[in-house]
Length: 334
Ligand code: NAD
Ligand code: COI
Image (cartoon, rainbow, N blue to C red; front, side, top):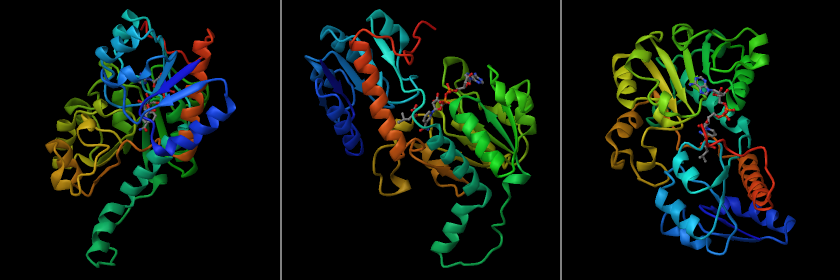
């Protein structure tokens, strides 16, 4: 049996080696390149592939894998919005993801973004760089005075809620499916509009679908409190960047913490040396603001997460090749 992995980084190699040691009968090949129509040929002779990327998986790449007789794809991450399900189904692929590799990684990052905005850390940093060691006017706010609206109470949203409650924040939540524990705590509101109305901070933890693309648009922002903070550690396309920029310009939005951005692949994963060199005007506009914190889709990036992403994705791919049905097969019929 052979598994071929795409987009393998140096920081993943120790966990990959451990997996190989634990599975001596399985041949593992890998490349640092992501899965494209060109790199797909590298999987020749393999029974399944393991992959991770934020750019789209093209039909052409999948067609090459299909011609090589490969039927099993296991992604090392949670979100599968960069696959076209029709392509997967037409070509007969079975897909697994890693639904829970470390919700804490993303949740902790989310709450850190909130805290850095509340305590105006980027503004203090800017003052510090100018040798200014004074207090005013960068006065902060405390978590316990905030109502935080958590959109999506899945694995990550629920850890965000737990951490926020530790800080004494009031939480309101919205989800199309209600989690028993969150329901028992009485945190759910009936509509997004109600969540927008009540929240000082809004944080997104839902998958991206065609139906919720740009859910944070002009209309949604108009329903929010004046001076709201918006946090997005889910998917960039949930926010219409033009609407966010308008909200920041008018002061309606006091600040934003963004680990993901619409069209982030134009900027993330590369070194630009200076914000001025960023080749995306909207992202550059956001990056220049001291009330906007951008991180390069790195909320997941912890040692624990990386280890679990490698181990679970390879275990799942192996199980598929052996004809088993792991419980993390993605339902591509929906
Ligand atoms: P999850 O599947 O456990 O939870 C998602 C929740 O969203 C579910 O409870 C679901 O019912 C709810 N939901 C779906 N559509 C909704 C809608 N339209 N309105 C309200 N609720 C809706 O997923 P998770 O593990 O919590 O991850 C959430 C998202 O975070 C992922 O889909 C992924 O896009 C993103 N993510 C980002 C990073 C990162 O590094 N920034 C890492 C992992 C995941
Ligand atoms: C996910 O797991 O869905 C992420 O967003 C992490 C990233 C490495 C793709």
